[in-house]
Length: 264
Image (tube, rainbow, N blue to C red):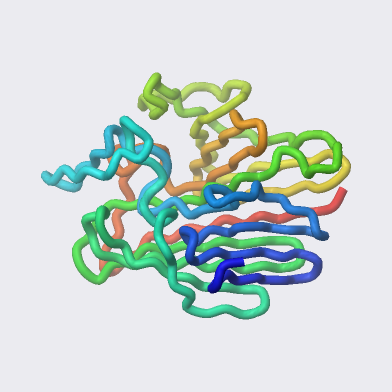
């Protein structure tokens, strides 16, 4: 483990937090079984100050057009915080709070705070973006990579959810602005759940895990063999342009997601 890595425990659950690697959750073990795909780019990383792709890396704030680096050409993807080192504000046995100050290439000053809170049967991730200077559009989300298989020869995970709509995806992987009835997977798609995100992952005979959030947007990505991703977020991909949420000195942007598990 890296210097500065944090381990949280509650019951037989154990979480590793990696402030130095993008403020991500590096692992979640329940009864010694790892639920998250391992590796420098995996685990569960925060998507902030935007989620998914920004079309051609450009977003508008009033009359000003800003350009972000094209780290998924021809687009910019998943924010800047996952590539940065975060600072540890405080830790206890079962909770950690870490912070990241927004900086170049993001054009606005601000602070991101993430709280990781573990119980014996749940993990809650809470994030806020605040500013003391100019207002700006932003998004918050999480990108977990759940192992498709728990590695014991058991059945692969099953995904169950009932979205109200699916964002039609264009050839450029971005929403076209049209909504369709949900289609069968495999997916790399954004869905609307106006009552709040509620997605159940089931490893048959082993574990059921529910991903919930009061936010109404979720991206489900299951096109890779090793893992499936269920990503609650405060708006759709390219949302800085299409569904901007404003961070102001009086009103931070806040969101949270909870994963709750039960043994089968």
